[in-house]
Image (cartoon, rainbow, N blue to C red; front, side, top):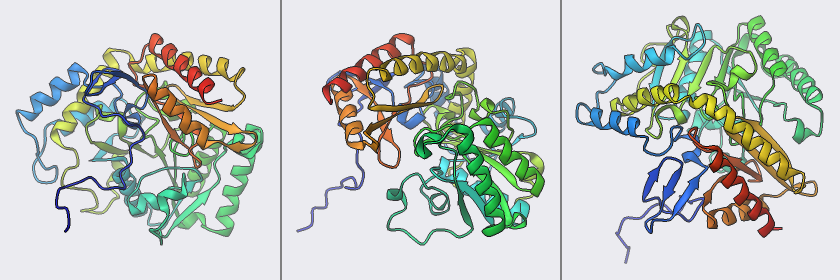
Length: 419
């Protein structure tokens, strides 16, 4: 007889064995009261930490006033307020915003916009990028075959170009950059003519693909080619943006301004909201009815996002991410001298990856064991990369030097325990 008791899907797998009964700042607390340093931040979401009092108060006030003011039916006053605050943070001329629920929906919105605005069908993405799990965004995702397996065929019009991952290629950064720009030019004469290319869409710092930063010369090369051919340049700042990299936007490290920015994750400290930023002129080139959604720009999530921006500014969290990122960088590089299996340490700010290797081979098994040892010692972290070989460091932007030092100390204990 069928068991009709409701259950979670067996496909939903937890990275840890922890049940989170409570969140408090940089900590998750289980039902027995044990505290865990949370260096996952809900995959980069809880930027102001768990349950920041100002974010909680803003959400509670909004819940008591209006929970759901559907954005294409009535005006939700929080949305223009949020757009105004975001417009103070985005580069000129990106002053118009489409709000949705998640990064993957913003990726879908970006594809619609660039195709409609240019009248061109193709989008160039970059190897190792992650842009979401819905079919359009998944078609642009190449960080892991596991995400795409069993659901082909993918959406047409997507062209994959190489990303300058120098460590992967075994080249210098200049060699990798030269190769990738040459291959991009080759794509224009072999695969996607410039007049059929709507946009290039790229993460300034790759997330799920392995915490690999781009570089200034490469992104400037993309900007030059986009300007030459009338192609739009879209930056996916879903994970790397909103202060995580030690600058408010990760692309600020490279001195390149995009035509559109995808925003999500850290925008509202845990509430589901995302945004696509572009100029008003570009947005107006989209077709009527192409932007919408039942829950997009939810009033409570928008109120939490407004409060999150205020907290980030008032508490200097971008500056803290820069300082604590340097502390984390120094601690990990000091460990790397004694643990050669830490083959590479890379990233920006509080978005750092440690690539584990056994000889010349990616060592996802070791990375998994390290995370379990860290968990047993009160530190929660995640893996990423095509072989799950990257231990990723993703603490909240409120993290302290003492917490950074405690976490790297636990990491060293885990290295020793799994040797």
